[in-house]
Amino acid sequence: MTLLYIVVFCLLGGLLSVAAAATFLLINDKIRIRILPHLVSFAIGSLLGAAFLGLLPHALESAHVTDVHDITLAVLVGLLSFFILEKMVLWRHCHSHECEVHGDDEHSKEHTAPAATLVIVGDSIHNFVDGVLIAAAFLTDIELGIVTALAVAAHEIPQEVGDFVILLNSGYSRSKALLFNMLTTLGTVVGGVLAYFILQEIEPLIPYVLAVAASSFIYIAVADLIPSLHKRTQLSATFQQVALIISGVLLIYFTHTLLH
Image (cartoon, rainbow, N blue to C red; front, side):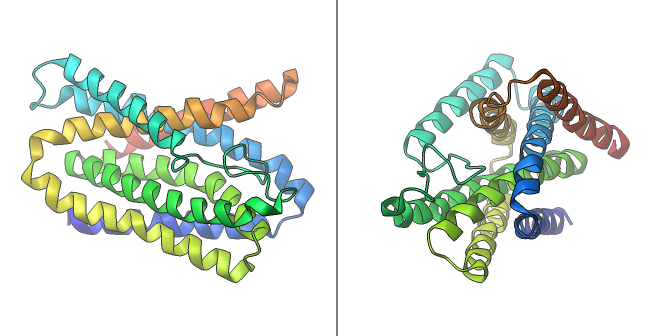
């Protein structure tokens, strides 16, 4: 039953995020540009909520952990590892056509092929890791698994929108861009299924995988998503951002509470 949960939520989250992103691209450009920052703000809250209210408490409470410093060390190692991955241009999320990592493809066509390749490769790796993290959460607790899958889906939607834009600007048709995005989401299922069988054999490592999952969510929220919000400095925009971040946190909190 746990394996079924893992497959369903890995597949459902990925396909829903791709479908939402594809639908989002059909909206008028001006409206989309206005809505996307709000999605990013909400994703920040859901990621931080899942990390601090779900993943880390379960990791610290595990019977396999004898020293909490081991968990905090795992978080630190995870943060540094994701920094290195980002330096390798494999982890960075883009949320518009203007991305300092993949290049501004609308104005710099010589970079379009590398940008498209990096989006596909990076997305596949990231989705595979997301699948591992979701599986570890489900193996710990069904409710934690659902909360983790929700947080993953929340941040995947703005990411997929950015990826779609980059692929389209790289010369891909809408149908081809949709196909490649759907194929990369299968990496989540592959990661989840492999982790289900491997982590069951090495159960004492699950708390440390949860710690790395938390570091992944924290890194994406703090190093990737939050800086994009600083482009809007108006007081009204700041209030909106804070309100949506809190909404994301509350979604995770109430979902975890209700499931529990």
